[in-house]
Length: 212
Ligand code: SF4
Image 1 (cartoon, protein in one colour):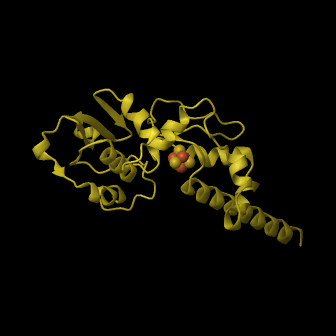
Image 2: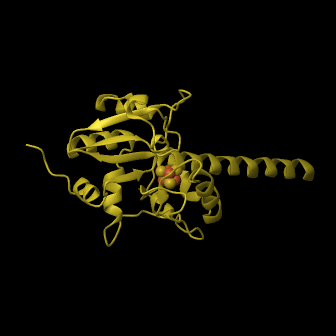
Image 3: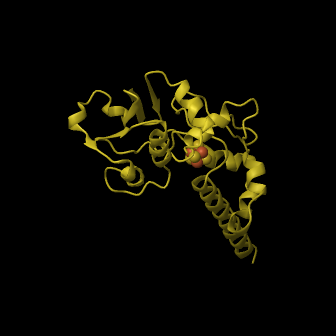
């Protein structure tokens, strides 16, 4: 028996006839749905490649230029396809492959106390190679966040913050919320801290050489 998913139920109940989730246009079609790239909204169905649910993950893995998409929320989803979902369960499957976790996060963000983890708390929880991300100052972390979470690179709307940086405003971002820093952000934070440490080390050596 199919388990009911409250997040999906809520999502479907408020979507109306159609809804755009990041770059995917979802339209009701009979008792099911049709999904396609939002920029193909007015394309004739027969001009779009019919993609099976089983292929949806592969579709989201690569750009039209066949480059890997480490961030599924990057605005680089390829065009020219459509997926049909017979019912809510198939819609859930399709969305979970195109935008993993998006519906659950959207649902969580509607709650009175969304489970948002800010940069400082998240970085302090890290172990291993990411422990050093806690050493970034607020200003340095804000610079990394501005660069990595820019709408040109990611369509999720960042709800978490670091001191001195506001959450993302809705315009330019999508309905998909970002509740905590992602792996791509943390890797950029780690690299920024390493670069800063190396720069300080080089300056120290140069100062030592001048004094000597
Ligand atoms: S941390 Fe930034 S780049 Fe990563 S998913 Fe969230 S908004 Fe996007």
